[in-house]
Amino acid sequence: MNIRSPFAGYPTTKVTTDKDGKTAFTVSPRYLTPRRAQVLFWATNIAAIALTYYGIVFMAAQSGASGWAWFAVFVLPWLLRPFMWQVFAAFAAKRKTIHLSEKTLTVRGLLGGVTFDRTMQHKFSALAHDKAEAERAGHELQIRKAAQRGQIIGKRAIYGKSFHITFEYPGQRNDLMDVYGPKDAAAIVGRLQACDAWLNAQASGEGFATRAQDQWKKQPGDIPG
Image (cartoon, rainbow, N blue to C red):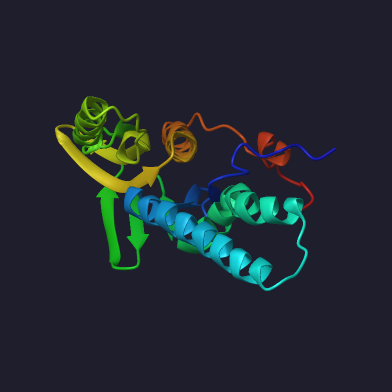
């Protein structure tokens, strides 16, 4: 029976061990930023409109098209929007590489990297996005103005569903990434906290095993595994 590693799943996490038996982690999340999520919502709407348009052109050239076929032309593209979103998101997702060892935290992106001293007091957090409140206030204003005109509108929250993943020194906040979606943000910060806790325990000599064989210390005469 294969036991699932606590570091399996999202985000992708590589566990390594150096020659001294010290464990380190490389966490590589793929995620949408708020700005990319906003662009994707526009892109999926445009794609659905384009499919509808070409469907109408195609059906207009046919003779004797059924009512169900016309119904599909107008409805199917919008039913496919969640699928299109997933496809677009797979291409638009941003990637960040975070390496954690006992002494350092290194964050790498396309434009370079930065290293922090992990031995100092610190913590990982998921904070509500700085623009969330302004977005909410703006939406409320637009909804009130629409109501005065007798209209009912809905506004999609982007920053309201986005979070800053931070590495905090005492009195210093360092934003590692901006993540759209509470599920992804929770998974990323949870994984970083889990790796951090493991390394803290290892540094204090109270490390725990990630594999069954790690629970047994090597003894003289052991057969190499």
